[in-house]
Amino acid sequence: MRRPHRSRRAAEQRLTGHVRAVVWGPAEFVGLPPWWLTRQGLLAGVLAVGAIVGTAMAGAWYGIPGLAHGEAGLVCAAALVLYLGVVRAGRALIGIVAVLGVCLAFHAPQAAAGVVLAERGRTESVMVTSVQDATAVVGRGRYLCSVADRHGVLRDVRIWRGCGQSTRPGDALAVVFDPKGSVPPRGVEAGASWTRSLRDLTGWAGALVAASVVAVVRSYRLPEGGESRGVQGA
Image (cartoon, one colour):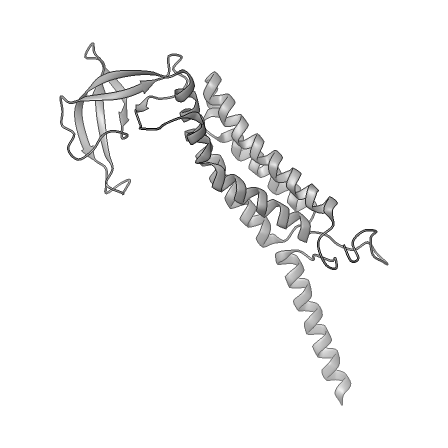
């Protein structure tokens, strides 16, 4: 009478284990993960971060729209997701990596523009022509200023850095421009530097690398009929 019950329990345990392996990865090793597997995940994450940020930097510096706007970064993120699919990482971890990769690809162009302006930008004084309260759209009490250069020519970009509730048409606003026109101008921000622009990406980059390592490590499956060398008790 107990055998069917045990058989049912064993079947449920196998099903639970299978679902867990599909969602989070099998992680079929004992103790700490093997060093080579950790290195593999670290390499994949670092290469993906370098490619996403590097393409955005190159696009901003040389004025290549396809790179500067983040499309190439999305391709790099997709390549990492494809790699994790090939190694059969857990579906949930692949999804987390995909979200982090997309977020990094979306944030990298702004950071890249900041690096370009910090390195070769020129600061000029422009005149505010109109102020728009964009709080309802953007949030956080943000205001957008339309500006004109010293010759009275309207700029086709609106500035939010340095533009506030007290700003009025006719006020002077310090704006930094890229002489080569590769990136749009922005208001001068205190303490702005290329290192600060890159620091804004460290959170997303670190999270993406960490998620990649976990996904690769947990993707490990024991070879058929035994254990791999260096995994047991690693």
